[in-house]
Image (tube, rainbow, N blue to C red; front, top):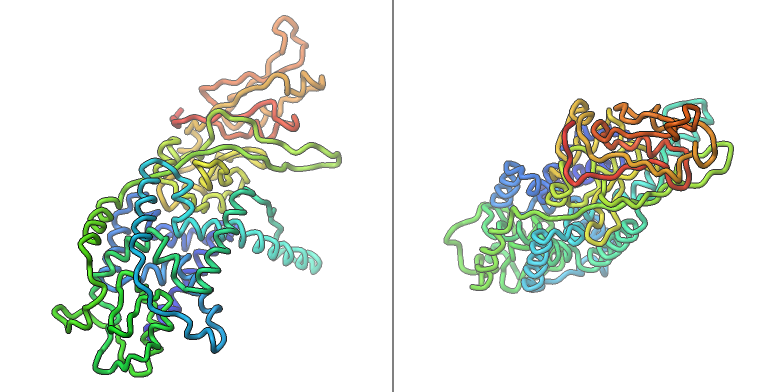
Length: 499
């Protein structure tokens, strides 16, 4: 019964979190966006201490239920492992293996060092929620979009508007390849050995494993009923049951409850921890002296932050009756981060690169960075669209506090950058035709068209930018007809300011 409850909750959480990355309408976030905010590492970086405390308390009470129910990467591994156990020969393929503490704590130490040093690329690579986010965003979202477009096509043929087309595009080839490599690695590990990633690589699993050692409720082996058949160990995805010694390594047990249903003798039950229990039940895992120091090291590192920054990238723009060149991203000296990010430093201290903001951006502005130090963290560029003043989606969904919640009124007064005019690209000067597109579409009226030659009133008009009024939304850059580089582009600000 406990296994069925756990499985049902896990599937429900997994499906809803996946849909948060796939839903291009943005409607699901209003109902289930909280599922992203209760992920352990994002909550820690956002300093949502209430959420962190609840997750730790839940672990102290029930074991690593976070890993088996809430974490999408953990549930995905369970799904893969289940398919890998098909067939009689593979049904009982697991076996007990001692904990590789040197690897677990070594990866954790590197993870903490990366947080402190601000190496956001390494943090994004192994953070579990972020790893699943890039898989969902880069591999599943395109399939979801193409499926939607197929339904939209069929609906059009039936004179129905139940579906509408959405644009499917690769936001970052580098991130796509990393997502594919991560998925392949996880499939191989989970198919062969179940929860290897969770118990040897995942830093969240290592942290929660420490607390899980002291959980109040846990699977317990009754030595009076156990006949040492080893069936529980051969079906344990975490490889944490030592059936010969009737012991369970609770730091690696993810409370999947599989052992309870698979024990033919009814020798394993999930019950309250008994202090002063029989030695055989408390035999393992025994804490070595060095483990205690590692735990102390681990406990003191919980609230350290880390991360990175941005670069720009190429993108396609709308066509027309004539063939035109694709727009290309300019070489910005300072990256652009969305309103609510406060500053490049603030984003770097909180962002885990989960790409949820990238997934929900309706304007095609955000995409994951390809920079080595800022890998998979969000960046802004205006080749496909611009940051519309009425949109605050990214600030609403960010679970790590990297993009703080803002209102539409707040956004219209936040300066994230300023426009820069490039004379040699301007259409009135290169083609001798009137334009003024940038001035017409500037939402703050920061651009004014003036004669290029002050002594000649009828000379071609070119833009003049009032940097004090410009908020860096990118409307001018996006709507500039010059190709492949716009005649006006936005240079980011390291610290945002209110105007």
